[in-house]
Every structure is written in C-alpha cells, then in structure tokens.
View 1 (tube, helix red, strand yellow):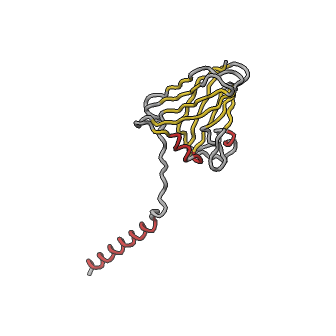
View 2 (cartoon, rainbow, N blue to C red):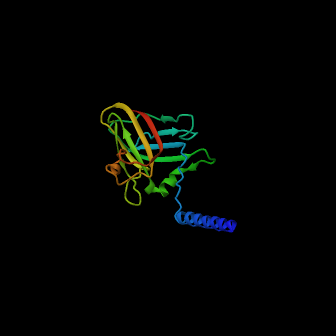
View 3 (spheres, rainbow, N blue to C red):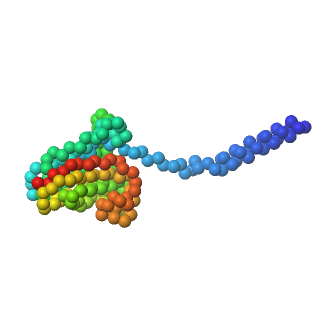
Length: 193
C-alpha cells in the first residue's frame, strides 16, 4: 500500500513539474540574436568639390577587432585647408574570399547603423548626406569641410550598431548619447595644409 502511495506521489510531482516548466517556457517568443558583423577594412574616400586629388583614409585589421594585432591606419595625403570633400564609405570583411562587402548589409539594415565623425583641434566639420528609412542619419555618404587655417589633429570614424537615433544630439552626429555597440572605430592622424 505504501509503495502504491509513493508511486502516486512521485507521478503527481513529475506531472506538476512538467506543467510548471512547460508553462514558463518562452518558446513562442524566442529572443532574436543579432549577429555582429566582422569588419576588417574601413575605407573613406574623399573627393574635393571643384576637382583635385582624391584622398583615402583606410583602416585595416585583418584579424578583426577582437584579434591580437592592432589595426593599421593610413591617410593617402594631407587635406587642403578651407576645402569641402564629398565622402563615401566602403566596409569589408576580408576574412572571407572573396571579401564580403559589409557596406551592402549596412545599407539594408540602415535603421540599425550610424557612422559618427569626430575631429580634434577643430580641423574639420562633417555633414550627413544619406539617411535611413526613418529620415535619421546613416553616414555612408557625408561631406567633410576642413578648417580655414592649417593645423593637425585626428579624425575618428565610428560605426555604431543599434544606436538610439532619437537620443539627444545623435541626429546631429553627437555620439555621446548614442549607446549601441561599436562595430568598428578608426582614428586617423590628419594634417590640414
């Protein structure tokens, strides 16, 4: 009799556990995992308005941002003072062959991305030219205008994944309140002559 009672008790506990765990399952709404892009190469191409020498900024990090080797930053030439350049970005994943053009993915997922541009020593200012489907800045296309006086400093280009584009200042290019995750950041030493 005791064995039957114990068996019924065990069976009841197993059924109760199954009901509780099944009831708590969130299988109907699985959490969406967003894959972070692998970015090895960032190239900003700057074409001066009115003609002149095209300048490129390039960041190359073939083992990715989490790899042991630091990225290499190059600038093809000095910028000219008091000049506006039309800029465009190309983003690649060169860990694959042929290289994956991440630029296309950023265009497709434009609401989830934004480039930010920062310059030290007031050597340049930036204006967004392209916008996402909600009319917020994207930054694959931009203008860079150099200061009227020669000088030197750095220009930092940052790509944020899932920034808060409605936060204060973000639509003007202020990264301070953007949040999100940095996909790539490149710091270029610049001379304006």
